[in-house]
Image (cartoon, rainbow, N blue to C red; front, side, top):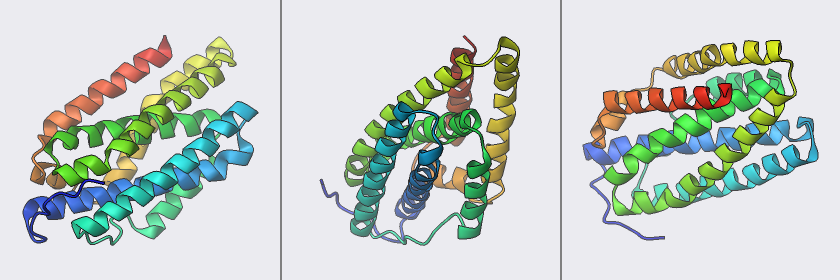
Length: 217
């Protein structure tokens, strides 16, 4: 792994990037655990194999990020509380297969990786290098989850499929509201690493709308 010249530990950039790396790693670990929990309840062998691969990929991503955070000198204290993550695990455990894929794919994987991609050009070389493998993995995960979601929706009646599609924006909003409820200064972190946060939010809305149109088609 390429090692960059580390910013000073108390610099605005270093503190903000460190917090974003911790958040990204916590989310990856959550995805790993949620997919492992879902593995035995996946509808068929192909789904189980895809989830098993994702568990391994996410484990690798967490290891890469933790290794880089040690080199970068990041305080790895959790930014999302354990109790909040436990609450989210309960929520995901209760979802049926379609809703599980919807929230994992549309909100956490697709939009989350889109947000991370926006800071890559702004990052120091070491952080940029550490994100290469995770972001490549995310492309595979999104493709798998989209394929599974399309396959599951295709099995529904026209009426139920339309009802599910209409529910998707509400599910996205609910999960985003949950994240907002954690009261994390995410906007400030993105601004402190050089990102235009309002523009980032607009890009995420555009990406969300594109995915909804693709699913409806």
